[in-house]
Image 1 (cartoon, helix red, strand yellow):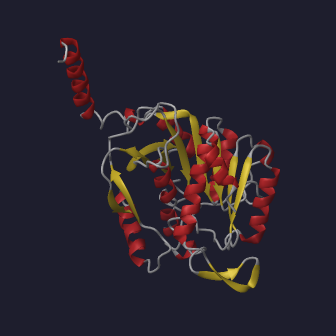
Image 2 (tube, rainbow, N blue to C red):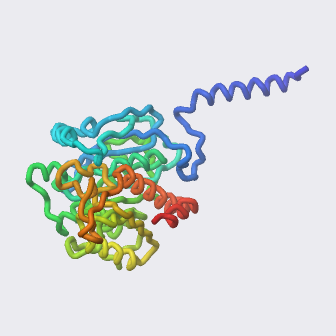
Length: 363
């Protein structure tokens, strides 16, 4: 027979089980200081918030781990204001499989995994592009526990280009874009009025990713704002004669250089500069060269307009113009960008040696 003490003990244990069973949606069982686990990906939430930067109102897309159920949504459904119809029209005209125009997310979710601080990554889009340009990478990082924010660099977006008002590729535009990223990080860390307090961003683990002109923007941000600890730069030399401002000698943060070997936008000359940037990088750095990849092979908006076709279909081979190259599938290009970015940040932020091995075994 059970003693009274033993009966009371089992009743208490049963009560605790019942109580905890109903609390799972609010508090997770993950340890406080471990990195996000790629073997157990989260659902992804997204929302749009706004920041003021240099007299401009920037829409910022946010991705984050959530408890809520996802649904497929097209980019125009996530776009806000007068640009929704413009983006929808572009998507309707796409007759190939290069662009990705649908993501799987929980829109506007306020149910967060926030028991521990979450690493933060900001993304800077290419010249005359849009905040959704690399949403596959943002979605992938969020699925593995990261908070990702991408602003529209207003006055240097796809919509400005459609109106025939593209910005100049110069030092002034570069500094504007750099300031945009710093303002967005201010809003995230200060929990701006449009943001819920439950996000819980980690101020000690902040990274930046940029593609094309966004790569140069990311490098200038790392050079100027000490809150950013590491960066991924895709398909552009960060120190170059076209957009002065970035100095390799002034780079004090680790970088991952992602190079498209058949880049028919910056050409082989640009790729030689990327290799030179990497070789001269004064601190820890990696370089991944992707054969048969074009300038927008890593991007979700590849082929969305005629000016974004580099990396879609076929073209003269940069390393041998007498030959034609059939680019790698854009799905493969986006997968390389997403997974290599995650491995890079997992190693830099959490000293994950498995992630380092993945980087070192890349091409």
